[in-house]
Length: 266
Image (cartoon, rainbow, N blue to C red; front, top):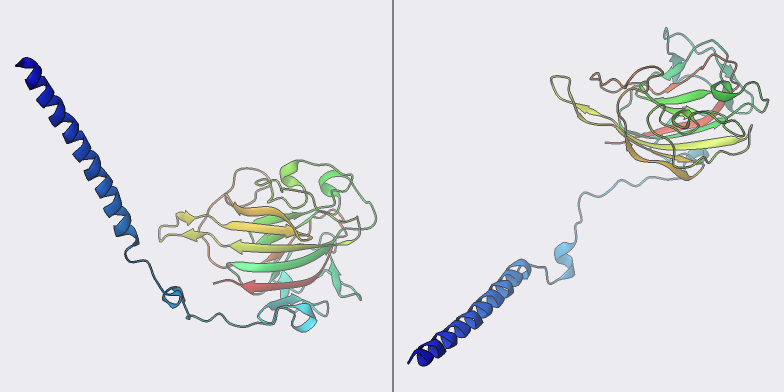
């Protein structure tokens, strides 16, 4: 009798397990069906037609995108002022369409204020070797007057890595050194997204920056920690749109700039 009871119990147990397995299998099938039952069945169901992006000429006048603001084309300093006192620029306007830092005359900055931008800058170190380390053709491109992309002649001239050419000064070492020969023209193509602050002045979103040096990616969507300080930690005081600035390092750098344009990013 006991053997019969045990046999019946075993049959019931295995039958129950089999049913449970079937239920679980059915549940998985139902879940899968639920996830896919609303999937589009026609290609036009996933086509989006608006908004329509604006059409621009990527190679407009003098090779500049047609929606860009030309900040310097070599003919004048109309878009620039002295950063220290808003007077006329005292840098050297050259006959070849470039400008050169005039030592100890101070930084220059744009008259206009900018937020998030695509910025194109061409720069050249002095062909004459005038110094070593941080004093050899030192300058900088500042976004919103606060965040510096370092300009420096590092060819056979080592310095601290977070201050070398292409660094986000004292914050981010470049992924590579992509400089051309000393005295030749370099390009920086910069994609910059401005930081965001709340009504209390607290930073809610860091600025980000991507830099291509002579077409080579050297900064990849780096989150800027704050102002790029020479001494001390980065600061994060709330601000809005601000000028683009070019640095006079004050050491007879001989750095030149040309062909500067910017596209504002919404």
